[in-house]
Structures are given as structure tokens and as C-alpha cells.
Amino acid sequence: MSRVSFALLRGALAAVYAVLKVFTRVDPRKVVFLSRRMDDVPPDFAMLIEELRRRNPRVNVATMAVLVKGDRSETGRFAPC
Image: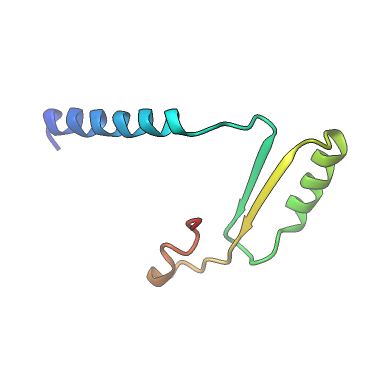
């Protein structure tokens, strides 16, 4: 990849990031847990969520647990819809 194409790609990605940054609202009390090892919330996540809620009841917790075995057919399965 030449320096010019790298600079163009970097500029394009910076532009996409700038647009996303403008339209995305950040919630400082939100914690997201992602797991690809099992379909249910893992026990360690459950303990962490319980402790977070004990320390701060206003915390917003989101979890996504999807078993992904690594097959090519599962490439987009973990992406949120």
C-alpha cells in the first residue's frame, strides 16, 4: 500500500469517525459486557454486574452473549442488529 493510498484511507476513516462522533451520545454510566464464549451471561459477568449495581444503582448495564464457534457462516452473528 503506497503512502498516498494510506493517507487517503486514513482521511476517509477520520471523516467517518468525525460523523459518528457528532451523532453518538456517550452515557458515562453505561457499561457493556460482550461474550463470544457462551449463549448465557457468564458467571463472572453476573458477579461484576451485581457489584456495579450495588455500588451505583444508577449504572446502566448492557450485555450481549452469543456463542461463536469460529465458522465462516458465523462471521456476522456477533454484530448487533
